[in-house]
Length: 412
Ligand SMILES: Cc1ncc(COP(=O)(O)O)c(C=O)c1O
Image (cartoon, rainbow, N blue to C red; front, side, top):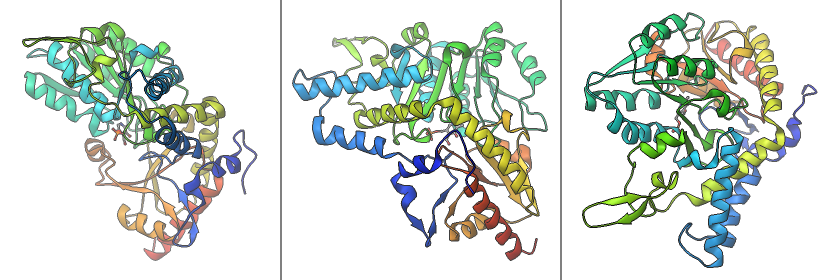
């Protein structure tokens, strides 16, 4: 039974063409939105409309199509920036969170990190917020250290404080964990890191789709997120940077459109953010991301968050009935985003995901690109059910039934 909720889930589901399909003859129960979310028709239409009506390159041509494409691309930048409370000129379109952290690694790190510097990240990070810093530390002969975790899957503040005493050059952490769901107090951590003189990088890949984000209040130096996890297309995301820092940094890629003037022996750079958008940009998908932001805005992010807290609360109650169900991360739904990682007895997560797939239920199994966190949890892998605006209690009920069935097969 669907409860009366602030979001009209049946109406929302009708907006997502893929949710009308069946998998193995069953209703698709999509619980893998943390990997990538589904897309509403408005997003698909916005992309198709660009290619059908005004496909053209941006920032170059003075003809009508070129001007329409440029206007749509820049309007999308303004919408996406405003959605996270940032000025449009500080938002660089990138392929996604991974490209954003790598941009910081090269364009900021190469210039500002010196041998002997300390870089800090945490034990709950996605590999995209670990590996770029390992590479940077290696190339600069800097050191990388990790903030530890409390047993409940929250960040250990005393570990962060201890590392801040060593005056790190960079502090990078996730706003929401893609495994534990933990929501970190980004404003507090950034202010602590800033007082220690560090530049802050926040991975917002799992935050922007799920909670209202206001970068004005968080006050970080860099904030990264991916369009495809927030109902938008793949291949587009954003790096929001402090404008002065973006101006001081070196370019990331060299080529067309990122320059002001090119001479034989040197070049000068276009204004920020264009300095970081070399070559032909991903026009169609940036317009699609603008449509996703319109869609989320029309639902209202406080309502989206409220819906997910209710769903997490319901799921915690229902899934506790399943024998062998072991969840990871904070127990309090208010402290986490719509992600539930768990194991079922000693059933391998891949076997579980295969059994659930036969029921039309899509979950993720594996290390979730967070191997250091898996080691900390003492497991090789977990199963993960993750929510978005189209999920409701009936999806949780289906998951519970699927888990009961798997438990019976494996004799739990
Ligand atoms: C917390 C977190 N950070 C970063 C990423 C990387 O995002 P992308 O693959 O879109 O670059 C993900 C994707 O799963 C994620 O969940």
